[in-house]
Length: 553
Picture 1: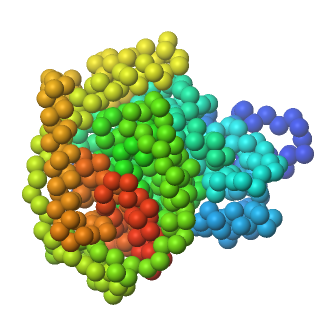
Picture 2 (picture 1 turned 180 degrees about the vertical axis):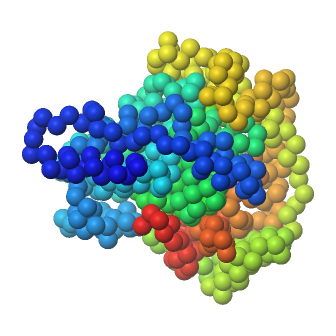
Picture 3 (picture 1 turned 120 degrees about the vertical axis):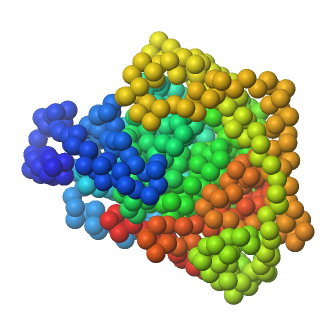
């Protein structure tokens, strides 16, 4: 039904496009559909958190997000879209920049190409991933300006359309964290968004996420938010989890909705959706990227990070966001040339890689991958993971969020009359006023935070102990065997990397017999991102395992 409405409107406007009197404000691009059967189909799913209660958002109207740019999308006929496909789809940034330099593309039709895909798939109830929350209404105009800008000294991110997880501040688009409580939250650009704009990246829009970065409810579906609805995995809508909490960042990359996306991670929230959607995700060392202007869980563990379809683009997006931020106490400056690191990646020969014995015994894809790495010249060291305690991990998140969220609300919310809440307790009360609409899966984690009475002194002891234990977990095998990296699966060891504040890079490793993606995750010590990216690029080049989802080619 939705596709028919969309195509009818498209044909109508194309037939009249010479007229200057077209009123786009009344075009119906999306009509809510009955999603009860879609939700019911998942009630027997083997994973309890995949048993959805609803699919669509009950509070957001997609027409409001999609109408403002509709007149730009209809300027691209299907024939032009098909003609541009080979130059854009699944291509890396240097290749696309080359096409633009040679005149095959412009930044304007690059943006319009991605908008075409978003409108085509997201406005059809049979293909929508409920991924896009908001679009930058000025993005096409901004692309035109870049086409006319004469400048030789350009960062590689110049003119590349980027999507942001909707807990990252961006002027002109609300920053909701997926929550009705923040539905109208107006903010300035987060520091990393300022850096992206400084380097002339194009902010295409905002994507869905697990509400409050998946730290609100226990056992609820990954990728659900009241604002965006239920994000779905393009490799199997309703079959496979999207991963969380950067669900929209992962699904949008898999479906080729932009060049890159920015996610955030506290513990696994970049690694998980990157793995589930067969894309490349980097969780950087804490402090490498600023957290200013991002809705927090934990100032101790939070970090943004790049999510892309290949390692080269990941390095470019990372470098475009770096910079010393005076407002983030953990922020560091860096002069690393991440792109040059991956372009000169070399081979895996002689690289010393640690692998988990238990994963070799339980996961055949991991085992086959390790064997393949050995044949490529890597030196493999098997080890049994050290036993370390993670006691206090949830307490760390609880007390950090209780303190960090009010700081964010006070510092970043511009329209304070529309967003009067200043504490987690006030948000909990707001949600309870209409629990069916605002918290259909409950808010048990929020309730637990309010009950947690751990003192700041006790919290500091917990933080110190967890960081020590997290580093012991990795350093024991790393130091013993002088490893370049430890290899994990998906987000299996994300918690240990989080408390150690170590970086982790996940790269497509293949697909299970069911078709569900699975990824290989490289973990190393602090600020070893150049080496991780080199290893990742060497692995990616040697294996070339990523396949785009069939329904979104």
